[in-house]
Image (cartoon, rainbow, N blue to C red; front, side, top):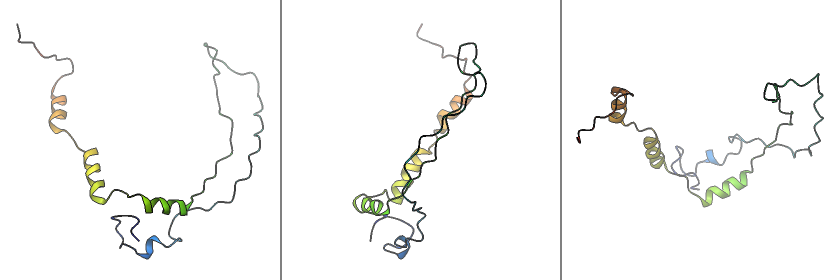
Length: 120
C-alpha cells in the first residue's frame, strides 16, 4: 500500500489504515438554510463627510458545515504522487535561500547615493 511516498512510517503500516487515528469530523447532513432575519435599525445611520456609512457591520450568517470524504481522498492519493522528502527539502531550501552579498550591499549603500557616470 504505497499511498504516501516517503512518509516517516513503514510502508504499508497499519498507521495509515486506522480510521480512528485520522482527525476527520463526520457531520450530519446540513439543514436547509432559513432566511436570516433582517437586522433591526437602531436610530439614524451616521454618515461621514463623503456620505459613507460611518459604522458598518456585515449581517450575521450561520456558520458553514464541512465534511471530509475520505474515500475520495484515498482514491486521489492512489492516482497522484506527493513530492518525496528530498523534493520537499529542495523546494524549502530554495524558498528560504538568502542572497548575502546583495543584502549586505543594500545595507551598506545609502538610499540617496546615486552612481557617478564616468563616461564624460
